[in-house]
Length: 86
Image (cartoon, rainbow, N blue to C red; front, top):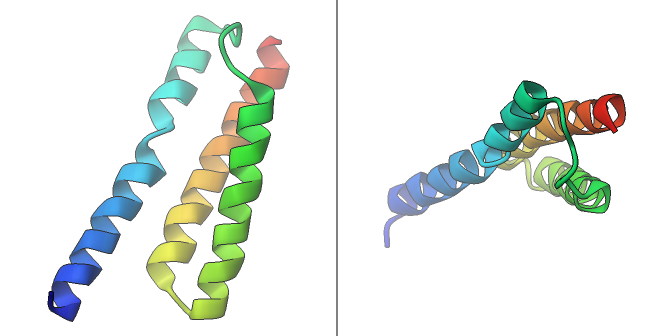
């Protein structure tokens, strides 16, 4: 596969995973309940995407850094909502 196809594939993967958690955050904000949300999962994912940001910086990969930074912000919002509605 050409370099362009790999870049498109990586960008698509980044977009899908970056925005995958947003519906959960919207749901938490809408129903004001975190009954079915695991704080351990939120913290584990936040740590994981933080490490991806560091790895992306090391590789000088904008898409890795940007996608995981956005995901991290989404998780910070989810954690704030979790502690607000807990």
